[in-house]
Amino acid sequence: MLKKVRITSQIFFAILFFGLFFFINRHPTAASIDGQWFLRLNPLVALIVSIAGRTWIWQIVLGGGVVLLLTLIFGRFFCGLICPLGAAIDISDKIIFSKLKLKSRPHRPLQALKYVFLTVLIVLAIFGVTFPLFMDPISLITRFSAILVYPLLWVLGLDALHVGKAIGAIFNDDSLGFATIAVPAFYGMAGCALLFMAVLMGGLFDKRFYCQYICPSGALFGLLSRMARFSRTLKGEKCNSCLACAKLCPTHAINEKRPERTSTAECILCGVCTGNKKE
Image (cartoon, rainbow, N blue to C red; front, side, top):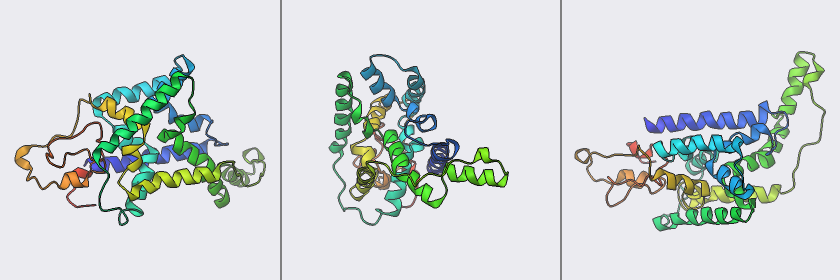
């Protein structure tokens, strides 16, 4: 049941994110209102920007605060159910890397790396530096969308400008059309493409590699999730100790020696452990 909820939620928020970013907003950029609304849901963005700016920026604090409170109740729901980059990684892991993974997964202690990255971001923010915030998953997916996906949509004629011109032609309304401009190309496209490939290539080593070992937002959610009111429970009389759930868990959240134990800091509420078949 939880797995179906997760997939449905990921599809809904992915459509919402990309729909607002590319089709409702006429000039999609990383700095647009429609490009920013997802950023405002991330407590890490609110924390880093507020620390660096020495003031509370309420436009992002309020949205991030709501997600923070929900995380204290449900755990890392944002990572598993909402994050569009997480959804992209799930698709990549399933389609591309499910048959290419290395036989041994990285050791669980390496998950502490993301807490190191989170600490570095906070320390730099104290000195007024926010540039490394691009490591944040919502910042990354926004950058990827603006610099990589938008030019592709332009070529295919699916961007907001082409759609606007088409609608204008149907209704004979020039106001709905937009001036024709060259196919957009942005500085840093090559570097951005390499970064995107690197994020997805983590699937060669482990499922949700970026989320487990690198993501600073995941680290913040993990810290908050330790106090979550709801978490996975396992009734001893219904467990035959087959350890299938621990092997299937994409984030090492289930203890492989004692499957009744679940790390709420790593559990992303994906529902994979509730399945009966190995993925």
